[in-house]
Length: 462
Image (tube, rainbow, N blue to C red; front, side, top):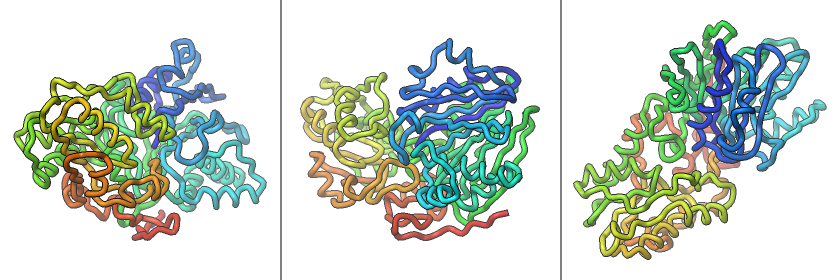
């Protein structure tokens, strides 16, 4: 998934970038990086690890510059290596360029083959590098950076939100379908901020102003003047449904919707669709909490914490291997036996992807003495891979690809199991189903990919 941020200011931006990335840590735990500039050569620090361990005061003080971009990485395309840490940066024809990308370019292999055929050399295995090759190709032909961005939108397929720093000026652009979020804000100190989620803007004292539109390009120059251009427009969008289900922070506003309110409404729908005779509604923290609150409010069954989260653990879903996910679950969630013993529990979670984590959670609650464990899930069954930036790469990894609800219930050891319906999910979002990507649920995608069925959206380029 990844998180990106770009800031233009009148003073050094390294600390603002750091705190903004801290606010986006939930989007990537593999590595972090910052590039800054004072309208000349760039300064950069990148390393594997969480934001707090990658940067310290000395490093941030050394990253001088009133313009900068940052990135936290969750790898989907490209191996987990130092070479793939973002932002990528390079100097070309006296241009100083850096870029960071959130998404997944589905025609990366074909484009890489094409550029290698032209003699271009690739230094990473990340799909982000293909964006830099397009920019280089356009600059070689003496085209403008705006032309290069338009060219990117024409030939790149898949999902992308990008921040691009070139010669001290910041550009940001989003794919025509709007798969991945991207927003614009300002602080009282005059900083202009572009970030993956509104929480990164608000976390540094800024005000979230609006979403960057699908297909829109934003240019912020050294005087902090903002220029916008609609480079492409799709007849229907493809906002990622999993952003609302799991990835985005609950306090983020994405494409006009407060994620907390969406999840709370889904929880209410779960209570209406699948009531249960129980003593308490509990959450799998933290992403299941808003769902559980909605379920409790609608059902009248009290909300009680039955699992205490170790706040020093990261998000288990985005850890790189299944073994690490399973180990993390054991350390991350501790049952509160006094709230569980001899009670019928409604346990609410956001999703079940592989099933192993849910099995271990149910098992731990039962071992703590629960009489019944009724699982309620804030998404429909995840049946198909994601090709647009979520780590759900094969049918074989997904428990919902081969089992129905009853089979999943039996495998995870729950007393009962219910997934929210797609109709209820769409209603909670307040976004038309035609403007959503629900490929992981329906197996039908918004653009051709992997030989899968699709209902391709039409894009008009300007």
